[in-house]
Amino acid sequence: MNIKNIFFICYFISLVFCYSDNYEKLYKWVTDHGGYISNKIIPKENSIYNRCLITTDKIKEKEIILFIPDKITISTLNKMVSDRCKEDFRDFLSFAEKEEKTSYDYDCLVYYLTIDIDNKNSFFRPYYDYLPEISKNEYPIYFSEEEKKSFNKIELETQIRRQEYFFNKSLKPIKNKVIKIENGIEKFKKNFIYVSTRNFGRRGSFFQNVNTLVPYLDLLNHNNDFNTWFYYDEKKDGFVLYATRDIQINEELTLSYGKFNNVYLYALYGFTIKNNIFHSSIHIRIKNEVFTLFEKNKENEIMKIVKYFRPKSVIEGNNIILQIKYELENKLYDYQKFIQKYKDNNNIINICDDLIYSVKQYISLCEKLI
Image (cartoon, rainbow, N blue to C red; front, side):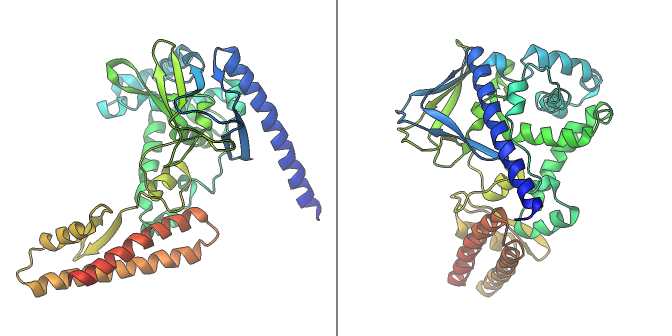
């Protein structure tokens, strides 16, 4: 074993111990401020990029697992956060358009983390210290322009560009302040990912959801077959997590982030699900017109395209279906080629496998319709 490998192992072990120590501080901070954490759960640190919660005992349906008081959450409803953001966003609030104002609380969270996360005396220090590292290999927003353009072939580029749009939109009103911070833009991007992937909604005034970072609750990962859910208890002033079914020993606690396909999950959250039950849509070009094929009713999707061109005969209609089939076969080739190119990237493989499954069904249907 060479010196470089020994150094890496020692570094990794030190990080594991560091994270374990930080967990104890986080646990104490939450409980000292009125939070409740069931003694039937413990954290599992899969890596410095990912942690989760595992059960040590059976949990019954409807059993309360966590209570996180509002006073230790981070949102514009928190006075410490709102006072600082109101000061620094004053000019922005005066001239912003309505569309931009609706994302004010989201933008504030990103900015607040950027100016506070390195503050050793921050009230939220125990929370910051247990946040996972951000892997630039897992978030498409960090990819090169060449990679982003190539991802158009697997329906991913549009979602990446969408994330870039919201990032630039969040940065724009406060950029003149961020660039004065050392590595400010890079820190802002990292915190944009934290807020994108970890915030929960709670009701504010006018029945609007307020983006909120909820310590400890954000340790739960996504699963379509989730076993917990949460709500905001207005009387107790905090977030409550409870079991939606009986949970067995050594089972991971999970939430649902939404009914998202792998393309969306990867672009926004940096992960995918093998055999995701929610399939990605497919974009094809027929006679210089772009059409999106959705998963729900494949035959209807194909016939919509046929009707769009208003064929005057059965033969003409069949020719359009043949063109659809041809485009789908090209898509199949692209997906298979991507799997070979990114054979070490499980996220890309999961996206392509999902698309291949759908496109093969479409091709088979085209053959039956002709």
